[in-house]
Length: 351
Length: 49
Image (cartoon, rainbow over all chains, first blue to last red; front, side, top):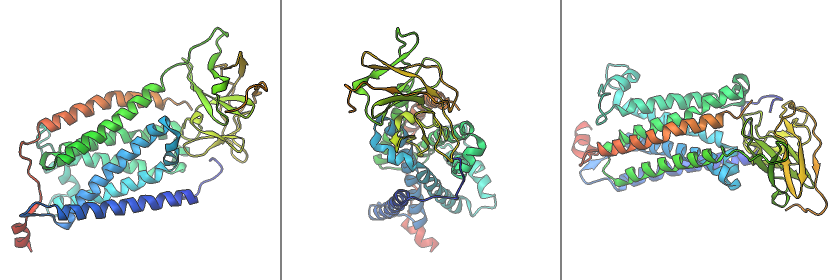
């Protein structure tokens, strides 16, 4: 949070998560190289560098595909939230694997000419005006630069200094990088790889990422219906409000609102975490504080302030209960303003 | 700060999704009927050694 910075902080969970990442990377590389050697066609042979090049290339793409699925999956089911919590380490690991892939390509295909290898990537094949034979390596290289920018600025220090909006805009470049990588593979390996497995895997992974993002993106744009209660928005019936969890309401104007139930009281805050704009309503109340599902930033439900010594503040909203239903006033209070929570009548037990 | 990035997110995928699908289809259509795997023939490796 805002109190101070450490280079990298490992919790036991993060350490376990990182060990899984390393084990997965090692397993993929060993399995890929092993299978490549045992299934190579008669009369042809991989060099070790070529096998490693393919292994790191496919691994980096698979990791990026997985990373891009985590966000929408976490919106669809809370079971995926632990993956979302530590996605950053996975992203940096992906960049490092992609960097190894690029270094091997530069060494193997561009390292022995008199032209600068980086210039050779863009200039050795001038066939930019044709899809067949397109210099696909240039697409991968641009994607690598985007991934470098993201990995280099992944620490909270940059988030705080660039501002959450700019930081988030920069990191949305990952979608452009993914698009470039899909075309890098489609116009590269797909053009000379005999196995239909490559075509199937590329299409399946691309369509999965596209489908998940489009479906969850559209779902977040359904505005709430105003009711006859003078502009108040209906949140849900009280019986549907789960204890320590929230319902998210999206006014036709302004930001989404997260309406939480904590025991026998209802309170509402902005759905936007001050850290990276995470969806607070997809988090839960931990130790009396609303906890962001992305990186664990916390806020008091009563006044929207982070517990001391942290200083973040978010807007609060008025709520009320009418005929067994919860309503919220979409007019936000100034961030950090105390707002009395609404007490639930004794007849309505928490789920 | 606003969650304006949700709107940008939708906008990006609104443009990227059809572009990617079309790009993939085009790449598959220009794929050679007999793709050539770029592994080196054993004889060439022996020669290089």
